[in-house]
Image (cartoon, rainbow over all chains, first blue to last red; front, side, top):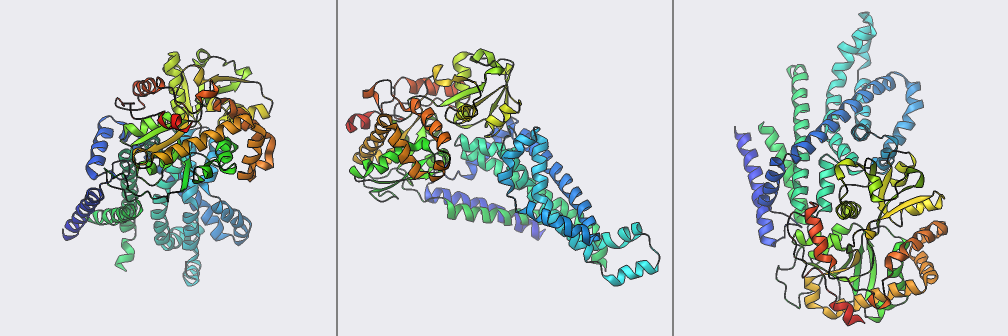
Length: 249
Length: 341
């Protein structure tokens, strides 16, 4: 209860300070809108249905990117963790891919991938792929050799070792990466929508900038923040449930 | 849930601090005539909404030939986004920017005290282009087709909406596809039938590839206020002579470029060294720009047509680009062009 009160107080304080700053500096709306201006714009965008429409698209792209990026990172991460040869062969390419600024690549993807939704999902997946991949590899390699020896002595199959030993060991690192991935997927979706999209919260930011509508831009930004925090919260909840055994030990 | 609140607040507070530190400090809303500008009296950063390009040749000519210096001004170009520069101008952080008239109307609709003081582009530079084989020669040919556009905002979109408005095109029968700045690529891939672009961009790329091209020039159907020199009410009130000097210097650069295109192009290569690596293409871009800088009559240089402003404001409202009636009385003035002559 105390935490809830602290949280609410902190948020109220934030809005109070924001409003005070706008009034103190006499900022016009196009530079820094007051919370009331953003709220009015939020209600307008909510009632005409545009905000939910754009937010829904972005959420689909984020979840799609998350699913694709995490799945590929897990599969590839497992293979790389298990095969030093494959690791040596493929890792340089993966590192090179990571050094590619996705924001520079995104306009080319407009030409290569014609479907806007799929394109943005792939961009989101690209952005989150590397940290999740590294976490999977680190997690799987963190299994202590003595424990592997125990599994071997018990004549455990590869599948049993994977389920009973490797997953539990890799899970904390993986879930940590998933938290990062969830927020990176939001950034990836926005990058995708910045180039060649006509819907989504990233598009709404572009549109509001083009129309000099700063309150609308804040509405889109806060919507992204809420989506990112919600995803982060969900992964945290998942982590809490899945790692209950760790707390018990 | 409470943790989420704590996290939300811990996220929002840094944003607040960032914004608080990052936003410019503004002059008072009713500045005194002697209110100091952020820029020094003689040094001016002129914001232009693009990357370095031979399309800014008249401005490079004004710098190189000393036209700005003749007015006691030291001007350097700053490249970026037109809308950002308009906000900086309205906030008193810049004294002058190059912006198109429709963006000035948009700015006014959002309460930005900005004024268009001299016309540079005499024609709105947006076109709809396509390979001849696509059979899109007139606006009516667009019906039932797919048209590529960089985004549903900005100058290209305004140009598109103006064409639709002026020619009464059934917009619902045309598929508008957002393609980013990849118009030529998507046209060549056959993903769209035509694309909206600046006259000096996509069409020139087609020209360089010797692709026979159809052009639908927006300005042939509706005359919109295009790129020109824009300043703020504060600058006009406090430093009218400076405004006159800027207008005179810019227009001398435009006139010089029109009279000596070869020299002006060579000057621009000094300012855009990358362009010198592909002189042929950049010369084609420069040549494609010249008709858009040429006034109907020599003595009309710099003057904006008073009639187009209310017509443009009305079109923008009806097209849903602004959500209110924008009074155009104080948006533009020819006062400084007259003084500069």
